[in-house]
Length: 211
Image (cartoon, rainbow, N blue to C red; front, side, top):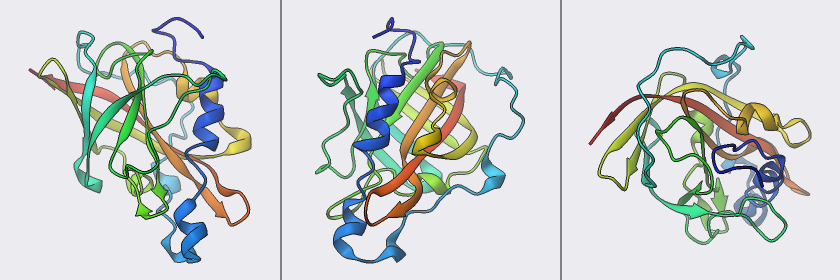
């Protein structure tokens, strides 16, 4: 694994694309009408330019305890995620529908770098924490409650969907020169044979913080 502040590790992608994406609920319900929303093309970043626009000053390191995304009704606790024995990022327990996780060996949300949050789109009982992530729009706010008593406020830059065979590891997990956040779940279409075909990824940057 690379250093604590360098999150660009392709091994993380392998579990994000697999362990989060079985589509258990759709497989067991037999109803494709339950498929979660997918990002509109208009929400993607088509410029190809590095995201270096203005943002808020970085916050000191502090573990996050909760994530809120008001526009899609997300309000969930965060658990720390480590690496599996195979060297890939672990995932939250599938049985806890309203729980997300953050990569605790990497950047904490609000400090300079790329912080990673991941969560399930569904489980055997129905929609999970990031079921509506694909409906998020650019300009939306993400709030991360931190253990130091403050809240890191992020603005969404883009919402994109990638096929598993074309997941851009460096774009998603690579280091950033400003405080940035990635929120990841399953998406990219659904197959009854293999589950979800890829991932929805939200790109956001820090715009404020309170303590």
